[in-house]
Length: 122
View 1 (cartoon, helix red, strand yellow):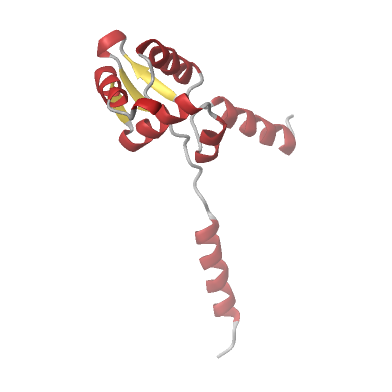
View 2 (cartoon, helix red, strand yellow):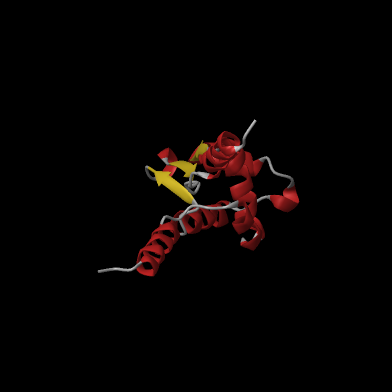
């Protein structure tokens, strides 16, 4: 029979295998990948031609060569930063945002306050 710690470890492992990104993860990316992810986070979904056109409009110092762009998109897809739908020129890339866990804090706080107020004599 699994214990509490086994269940907690399983939840942690499941969350880590989900992929996706957090804002803090962006700081660890190489500059070219970070530029692509900043672009994708602004738009959330772009087709391959839209990405190439946008990257071509970057200032010259920030432009990414087409071969490097393809490699970067493949890397970001493999690392689960992006989700690719389709192939080649028809591919659509979407940002893989992590699912946010809900919080029960607000409900618990109000329930506790209500209980305290009910117990308080007037």
